[in-house]
Image (cartoon, rainbow over all chains, first blue to last red):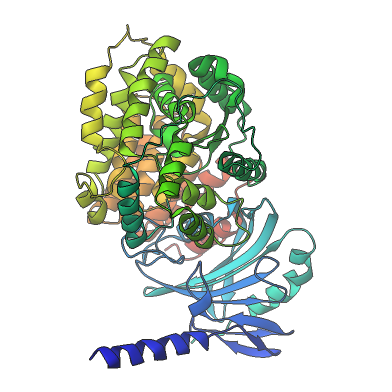
Length: 190
Length: 395
């Protein structure tokens, strides 16, 4: 019994070791969030298993602090950020209004090290034929770096499909903003 | 607040209990005292906290209200006398009820604590309590206890590992560091007792000390979080903080009040008023609706800021979303509209409720009122599209 437990633990550890960031070539990218996006340049994909702060995958070109694109699904009653089962953290609600969902995303970001985070230009957007919302983000990373971002979500009764891009305001946001705009436009929902 | 797991806390607690056999008393500080031996442990801790303090200023976590920051520094000076120049107070944006004191004189007080306080006297008690930790060298005593247990390296290593490389500037780092060398139960009680003396000497009302804890207890008892509810009266083997009820009893027995100042509450509320909505929304976002409602209702008892607080109450009901909460939310929003401080967003939330009920004309009217009240609304495009949709589909 003990031996089989040890073997199982070893297998789990080995499997965890196999989860590493991988390079993804231009083209459609599948994510653990259950939707696809299409990228025009090469990015690295960080699977959900090694994403320490939030649920879902992340894509980056130059490193997580320089540009990061979160691809996530958030089930009703669950947080987007990683948290203990009973923790008091922002959680997605089925009956949340659009602005409440924007506030949910902003409050979640504040819990993982961003400060002065605010949403801007909140607007409706059709995403793969469904009614969604787009908005901008502005704030600071915990080291004081000004960050800027873009986000989009499509709510449904069961879960929220969420894309959040964040990068330092200086240089990195502008460099990727147009491509990210295209990526959000390419969301392919199941 | 700390990154410690139960197992690590338990091991640390056990080791500290064993180490307590040897004395770690460091005595009191003298004003202006700094570490003289640059190779000492104190100098090392001092340097780490100074580095953290420098980076803290750039994080965006420190409140930008200069008058509020200045008043906190003034109160700290009134309490600490000759030690005034040794202390730097920072109000940091964090919804939790907390304050902390670093061995280099950096005192952090959370916005969540200022939100819950009702008078400057209550804040003075917290600052006095934290100052005693500094004055009595409690951090160094705690470090000595950890060192005597021969686990200092492991503790610091696990703190740094838990905080993550490169996150020296994060509040999490400070919290983890503070947690590793958390003050003992005796130190906490000493800080309460001596804190009352400093308050009294500086002319603050010592009766405020039990008052702030009583209000917190009421809020905790209203929690919707079952785990938190179970922990209110649970005393773990290695708990370092006295239970709240025990603390209230002790403070009540020590604290002899002075003539209460009838303007104290109003003066304090005026100071924090610009932040009430933001600080409350930080609390509300975490989803403990029971505690959030209790806090909101307590703040409403002062019969001030009722536009803002009714709006907050409505948002809590919307988030809680239990049977009948939509109606309660609507009632609170309508009540909010009767006060001059009603946030424009209350009109938008009313529109959202009417829209969800299919009352299109009323919904469109409320949303239009919202855009009139807040012409630069960050969600103007979204709201305009909702108005358009409501009017297009009106029968």
